[in-house]
Amino acid sequence: MRINIVFATILIIQSLNISCGKTEVGKKQIPDFSQYTVTSLPDFAQNSVIYELYVRSFTPEGTFQAVEKRIPYLKKLGVDIIWFMPIYPIGEKGRKGKLGSPYAVKDFRAINPEFGDFNSYKHLVDELHKAGFKVILDFVPNHAANDNVLTGEHPEWFIKDQSGNFTREVADWSDVIDFNYSQPELQEYIIESMLYWIKSFGIDGFRCDVAGMVPYEFWEKAIPRLKAVKPDLYLLAEWEDPELLVKGFHSDYDWTLYDLLRNIRAGKARTSAAIEAIYRKESHYPKNALPLRFLENHDKQRSMKVFGVEAIDAYAKFLFTLPGIPLIYAGQEIGETHRPSLFEKDAIQWSQGDSALLELYTNLVRIRKSHPCFTHGNFQPLQVTMLDGALGAFFRESDECASIVLTNLRAESVNRWMVTIPDTLSAQWGNIPFVNVNDSSDAIQLTKNLSSKSFLPFTTKIYVARK
Image 1 (cartoon, rainbow, N blue to C red):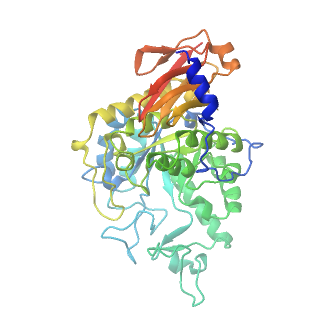
Image 2 (spheres, rainbow, N blue to C red):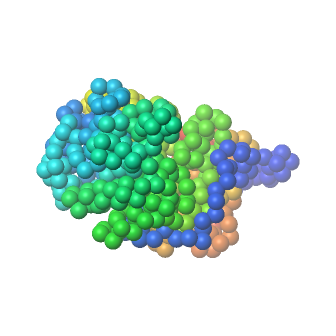
Image 3 (cartoon, rainbow, N blue to C red):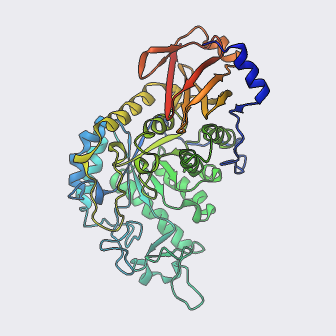
């Protein structure tokens, strides 16, 4: 794919779009924690895809037993870690909706009878383990239901206003009240509650709700205690701050990337902005960090509604080739456009799902797990020049394999583009064909720069090579 002299002249004269781009979107400051390393990273986590599941909406029955019947489906999808949203009893005082939010916890050491009991959850976790899954549980350390069992036993464990009433930092969270972490006994209770789920059910990790609203000193105290009991415990913080990874978490949320992808889809940013943001995070985060990367979760609109049927293929392929750990929220893989209510019975409509999209996600999970460059490889943005459009490119490389990803996440075609291949990559990989994972007849070599007249809208091409 040779670039002609006329095209080269146009590039020089017009100083075209160079993909280390002009946009400032997503260029927020990231504190530099690159001198640190995430410790005790479980071996299973780096190769995994997380599947978020809300028991109430996952099946029409909304029970643990009904979830258990769908284990073969989850196995076929290929995901590895099952994240259960909170399964605790839900408060009644100030409850939102008829059934209430799972994040308004009435008792941190009990199970919501709506879902089942101790034995049925233990059986479900055991069956998931037998099938090869890891299980993480949503824990809510920042707040509790207005009528949590502790309000009568230990009212001093909660924040109070000037009138002496229980209160909260976020006013809209009217069904909860905040813990007072200045109380050492409360800290011990929270640690022991987390240990209860590890010891009683063999939980493999926790997703910690709004982890950054809890004093970081608590995590420095709590996490070593948890890992002393379960050394390969996986910890996901619902927050975006590399300091939490230094304190003992393995993953935080990449909200920056999610917001950027929405802006790109809306035509407010270029594809390269996302690639640059990922590279900045890779350069500033602790080594071995696994940022959670997602197109949706229970707090956001369905990805099919945000990105649309015409674009979802390109965005999903892009996400599954990135460093970090990808997330699928139950129903995402079949193209659900309705986001289930947290407060009502609102089951996913599995029978109306998009089988082609399910096949796409199943294949992406398989491709990611069968190519170590996606789970362990470094991340290198590549310079792209073009007459117009928003093409981005990056290189992933591990000891065993490498990949070059070309992606256009915008609705406009790219015209007259060129990807510059650094000499170091040409020297190491130039004689090895890179084959499109979706079309074996489409192969490229890195002996020279890549170029062509056009690149289609909403298209991501994944090329891989093995030594």
